[in-house]
Length: 280
Image (cartoon, rainbow, N blue to C red; front, side, top):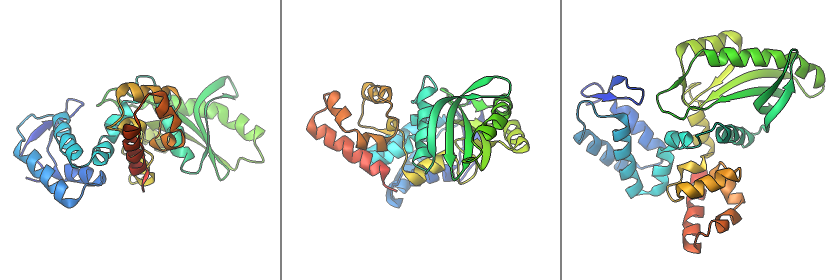
């Protein structure tokens, strides 16, 4: 049973054939060893039925990973954890800024830049090696929604307006400039084609290949704190309100855990979980 024996329901409502290799790949990405991966895959296959949802498959695999080792489950829930950064888009903007910051960029969020026609509030400005990146973040709180062509069209018009004034005022530091669109979901085919045609850099959950958002996070150990299986939703919200969005940031602000009234033994487990998630 490698692909089409069972039809499953995606979060978008679409029907597709179950592909065991995708499940196996996502389980391995969590860090689980081959023995545990094989055990989970076999159990999921045994419990399949026509019309099962991807969410149900995820929940079963997640529960088994958590019993194996909590850090595996944390990494496995990455996609879901990014949705949990909502309901507003601001924590996602902070998250994107944090991922780029720890990738060597100088970043600023919510910058107002003067355009040729009007001023624009830019979600993230990221600078590295003289290249300025003007970034618009598009957060979706519901699974199954895609970023359509209207988004890169809108972003391109704003980028085009601020480009020339930015070049004129930063002649010494600025070597090149690029517009970005970053989303936590996927782009439609038209959105990707438009971005390529207009020279926009599009970054999504699965694009570009091998350097998508999920790839960058896994490669650099830059997980959002919402992946934690030890922190409660209330505790996560408190930390987000303190502008802490990455597990890595918690390790630099451990005193915040004391504000939450967390016992020393539980604090030690949380810190160990954060350290495990930061290992690359």
